[in-house]
Image (cartoon, rainbow, N blue to C red):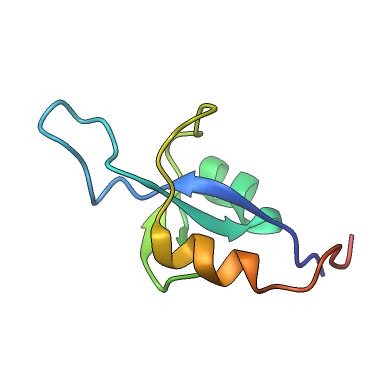
Length: 78
């Protein structure tokens, strides 16, 4: 089981033009599954949502997810 995480979008938290306000960190092994099946994922901060978009470089990241991610041990189980 992998402990690596990647930022993903919380589509529940959007701006008026359907652009996400911020992206969340989600377990890497759950991203593709959610994108294909529409299943819900749980971000490090506890937000629950289906993966529908990928972040672009410079996209805003949830401060709570970032704080938790920064405190995780480096590497993980790949």
